[in-house]
Length: 539
Image (cartoon, rainbow, N blue to C red; front, side, top):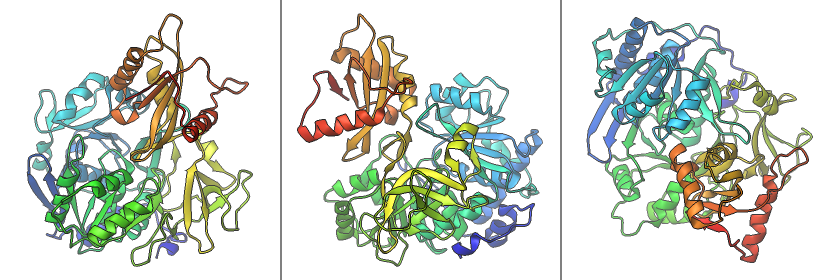
């Protein structure tokens, strides 16, 4: 089926919600969403029928307010049912939804709004105040709850329960994600209203969801993984998604207890969470309803996989994809996973390896750049970035270059090696060094900085900053704390450096670009020799 997607021709206009989803599921009284608030115990159940009615009411309300196809709709809230209402409504009506993580800071929001001005802002009560501080447009403001100056989201439920679908083409946008890169601030990843939802069939396949299953994905709204595994995958399959809304630090034991209580069948979580789960002791649960467990974000080591299987009987299967795509490579359900491998390419993508001269790699065990050939019109692949210069660097000679390196073995299984650029992978997040360096430089003591990722057993990588101070400032713990505090006020915690080292110079090219690879090599040599610089401070 996935192989046939490569040659599938869609007659435009085409609306996935009205022509696929609604014909299959709109009148179904089965639970589409089970919501549980991890802190309060509040439970809400939304049937497929109720979801259909609610997103149509959402569409009608926005249209009555003058919001039409192509309008930008930001949503900043937790894993609440309204997330599904907004995303499904946007997809049917042709609104462009911009999911916004609740932990974004005002500094980051200012940048996003400067790049893509909102026509509509939807927020929970907790985030509304932060948004008010940075909004400088006349956006329509809806709050899930109550707040002075905002329209209550409940007003949508006064509208008619049927809405006309928009006429949509492959180049019409559905969703944008801001994603980090090596240079500059985050760029918007642009996905199609047609290519993206149909392409998510690869994600359904990678996870192994069936219509009768209850599915849970441990991922916060605002990230592509939420759209993949919490939104499209279960709804494409007609399954039930369990949304566990937790705030702040993950309570690992409580989370697994809820997975057990609600009889979850398919469970998707990042490597950081799997490592936390296997560290738990004396947890009196069986997870006997669990059928499939999957992980994405970075390779899982064999010890984690083996310990989980010993306790709960399922094998954690790795799979691979990006914010720019849907699932691209996977160890499929029903097949014995190969430890350390992210699996085989899924047939909806013409996924290959190329060398640095763009020659196709055809022999096993040769490291190359992961690329998608004949990428135009690929179901699931993005249309491009908001930055043409960035597009030119990834769409090369008929290939889309993912920015990741891998090799394949004699049996065609792929093994992830590393990023080809300096993007840092930490706790399932991609962090661009430039973002962190730009925040560090705002401290009055800092002259210059360079940021890299260094190996970490729990986070895969943690962020380290090399800092040159201005004259008159002292290399001390107090100065390091001041710099760390500055970054913490501007960026969320996962982007803050965990190590700060003061230095007098940074390796650079003739043109003045920082050689981050040399800093990484220095770190590797130090680790091998057990050496730590005198002016290094940990957080």
